[in-house]
Image 1 (cartoon, rainbow, N blue to C red):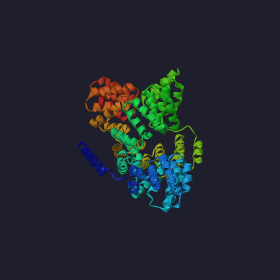
Image 2 (image 1 turned 45 degrees about the vertical axis):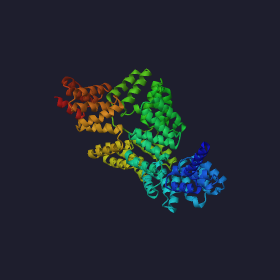
Image 3 (image 1 turned 90 degrees about the vertical axis):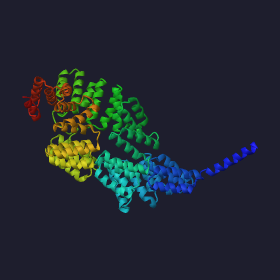
Image 4 (image 1 turned 180 degrees about the horizontal axis):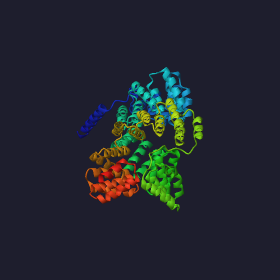
Length: 636
């Protein structure tokens, strides 16, 4: 009886297992599902469905081809090429796959091979092949030729959303934000479900309007495919810049699930770790990211910063020297390199790097102090004392263009040799401004704007030339057009300054407010806002803004300390005002602004005699400053 019972239970168990077993995969059904999700822009699901079809029918050649197409959309050229080989082995004609082979070759860094394959594609797939050919040309540094291929395609097939996406991507990479905006808008209209089009639109919107405005576009792309890697990377980077670090980390983790070991996600996580002060973790993540990001300016800056934080000054100098070689006009990189060289014991090299900054009237106190220390290290104490005095006095001139030492003739020769790339003309304009040929610079900048109306760099060059000529109202118009194309921090600062000089203070304030609404973590924007709040007597808001900045940058920013001293003095908190005023004065005792702020703080705290001495000194340091003179008159 026991044996019979056990046998019955076994039979029942087998019956239940058979009844609840999932149906055997249907290859055709899975293939249809793969094609459907591929058309809907859910490439990750398309990959999974194609894999299910292959599992059910390993010799189904078309399933291998569809899986290859999904891999291509996900950016995995190596896996795609392997599937294409399996497709041909399964009997699929090879001449049907040339456009896919071209795409796979391009993703693996072989643009020549991609072009060769594209030219062999059947007429039925000519559009796909033309797009790959255009991408390959762009990767070879031939954006003009690439755009010509796509324009020819769009003349034949004007509603090809993928072609509009590729055209927008190439234009954006080439700096033509206006042209990219037109193409991206057309792409999302024609291909609403394509994550590539939605991601491109997000990047264009981020450039034109700001971080916050771009986020919905990346989220829309991820609604189509939650693991679409390009959208995840752009989404994570944008979240990080907007200060949403936790959300950024979550996005990078999803990106690593989509592409295990992905260098871009690891780099972004290294940035997060560095922000949190976890140097070892940041270093490990950056090393895991590998050579794929090693040559990027941001990665080089981060790598050098990690070395510097660990006291590896020579290694930091090596990395930052490479960065300066790539971006010779990057003033911040030069300052960092100079400091690293000085800390590593090479004072002469530090002076060589910092010389272009030290010769400028608008040199900042940090760079001047570093130069002074370098001269002192070489034994030239007299010159060191001169730079100490300049550093103590603070900046004495408005910011000017950072130009090269090349002659205008040499710059023209370079621009003529690269006639297809208008960006070289920017160097000529910069050289003309530096050598006093303002009229020539304005004329050349206008010609550049006419040739590249969608390039923000051209509008900025025209605005810069007009500012040098003192034509601030016209410059504000040029900067506003540039801001409509790329509303980044340098453009915002130029626009706000030009509007202020043109007497349009309300427009300047509106521009700053708009920028901060999209970039709430911008230290520069917050510094400027706090300064304006002090100037307008809005003490409480100024204190709130400036204290937030101070907590992030520390107590070595003299401008922030000056404004905090004035704000606390205005709010009748003299004790705190004196603390900040004294700190600012100790940083720059020959700065009229710091001396004035310390004097105002002492007056607010009841120390009239000390305030009078400091304000007298401030007036002597800046005899034409109406605000300082007003503070002295109020004291009596």
